[in-house]
Length: 412
Image (tube, rainbow, N blue to C red; front, side, top):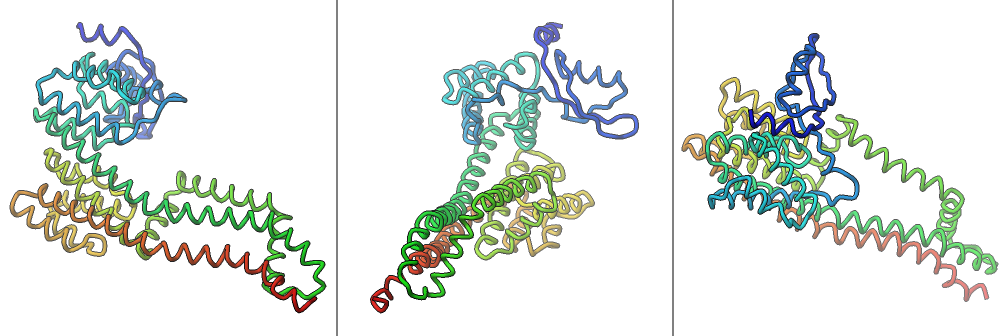
């Protein structure tokens, strides 16, 4: 009864997702003392709550002006909490030690909210599930497995390692793509400045030459005039294209699938995307399998962590095959276009020897190193292409303006 009173002391807003009598999904929010109270209220209304879909709505963590919580913050929190628990520090006290004076105030508030939920009698996994933006289903599943097996510190340590590896992989891919995109944006801005502000000055000067301008110079001057006359139209088109792209990314499943398929087929980028997907697949499955999560259940989280819709569909198909009695190796072998032979053979060895998580860890390390090589190769390939682009575009504009000057001697 003491636990119930502790929960009644303060109401909170919960978001929920239920199934009604007709089988349709219904969503909403309810203010109550606990998730159990919300569940009871919904059942009285003839609604059946979906598992794990009653979550406390956190306003303090996502309010404006707060410093965002990064993957690194979550990884450090996991590592620190694992160390505290391994040292025999009670969990509630560990939250105080880790949360007080945290370099990120928002993360500190989140840790204190987790402490309050655990103090109220809930499990750590339940407390984490109330903050899906910071702790995904994979994280919650691993913690839940750790609490049930009595090896929470070990699982938290594995989660921290997984988060650190995943973040390192994300940074490598971002690094490979950021550099060429940044240079191209700068090149476009420089070219626009030349066309709008510099070339008109040269064009006015050329009018007094009294000679026929070279065809290339005429083309560039016409391009400049067209851009100046329709500058706001071009800006609107660019802004519209960016907004439209973002909206399609958010709303269109087929658009995202098309982009993912294209990413796998592009030269250099395709190898990088494939290696990254295989590394994520191996690392995530190894972590969940080592935690004792059943293979079929683990595949759902693995599919979500793949980072590519093509691989996500393939992994979900693997899950269906395993559920019907097929081995993991046999299922992967049916799609050799996506899953390389090395992965398939290592999985087979792992299944036969009972060391699947160790074999998958080795595969993950290999493909994470392959991502490093792919990033270096992509950077090495892009640098001469970018220099050539700058030479053609910016250099071409400069040459077009100086060609009439070179002929000025013949006019005079």
